[in-house]
Length: 193
Image (cartoon, rainbow, N blue to C red; front, side):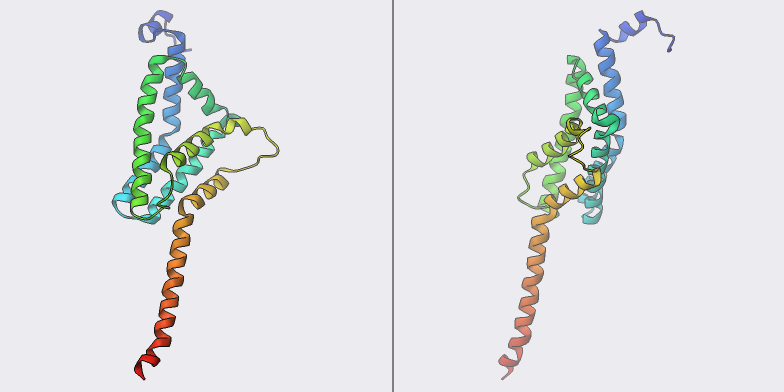
């Protein structure tokens, strides 16, 4: 019990729905503090041109996001978001905060593509949408005995998507360099004669 009169509550909140929406938004933002921190780490890594720190931050973010999505059998985040969206004023403020987050994520993915850390053909909106909606939407499969996954397996999946073509290109580049060195070595005696 908070020992607060009903009149006091309604002085700050128009309706019971707004009170619940505001409380759930507050809970949600407290839950995702570690996600914001890993996003900041990714942004700093880009500025400092530290690829290992960048990939570590993205990897940590994926595990945390999917771990949060599993709270209360996958329903906690879904319930929070449903409650937040139940009041227009709270929903509007919440969506404004999400837009800021999305802008940051778009900048991170685009910047990492520009410096060659992730596949340059990665579709930014598809990647961000699938990461966010997948981690939040896992409530659908929360009690499935057929669909078994872990936050780490999801992280591995997304990290492979992000770095696969780049890794293949790097591997091909290394093979090409080895071939050129081999050809140079074989050609040197021929050129000297």
